[in-house]
Image (cartoon, rainbow, N blue to C red; front, side, top):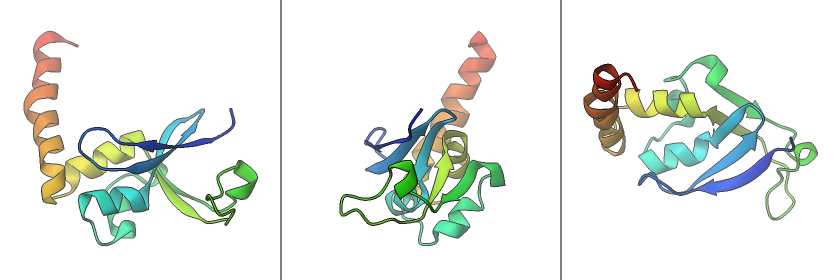
Length: 114
């Protein structure tokens, strides 16, 4: 499957570029940091596992150059990595996600098994 670059705009997070690959969804770390108000993308990525983040440097060969044809390197965060960042980060924009997961979703899974 050829990587596909799209825009994610759900859940009140803001606009985040997403690369879809066979291995799942990978969010552009810089976009995530901007949306949640984190000033340091590298420190933000420290909140998740090493396997949840990686840097793509050969975007042109993967069909992911920007609209001007420039080849850039981007740090990508996996979907589980994004959830880890949102749950661990203490910034106000992350609080509703963390609260919902720990106060609604996980108790419902325990109670109903689903």
